[in-house]
Length: 199
Image 1 (cartoon, helix red, strand yellow):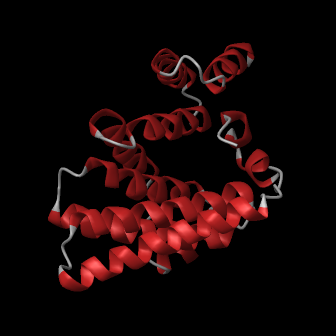
Image 2 (cartoon, helix red, strand yellow):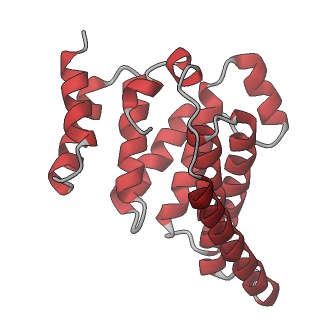
Image 3 (cartoon, one colour):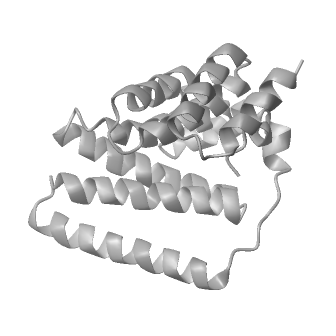
């Protein structure tokens, strides 16, 4: 589902398939998310600046956004989770400015909303989701270079953003480096071949 050709433009994203998730896997996923959120809220009740709890909430909302969009094809629900992830990330960055992994959530949110057509983008901005494609790319670039846990994922998202922005050389550079870092992953050679074959 992370293959960049699905996201080269809005039409391919909208036309992506809706998957049928394994109900047992889905149940385990949601249970793990619920446990993480409960533990995080319990820690934040004791310390509203608990970095681990804020990061866990950022991740849990981000994972739910990915699941809603990529598996269940629920775009509005995905944006709601994206907003929650961005809000938790901003709280984390306020207490831990060098928690660069959190910038993945803010960057993804800014880029996605900035890519939506203007009337819809205006509605989301009223709802508190910022629209800033270049700012979103900048946040993702910071995570890609300085992130601890999410740097590889940030580089994948950046490669997709570069493909959408018609910057094939930078996308190829990122995918080539990812392929060298993760030689057993077949996604990167496929994407590199696809980009090189494209006009």
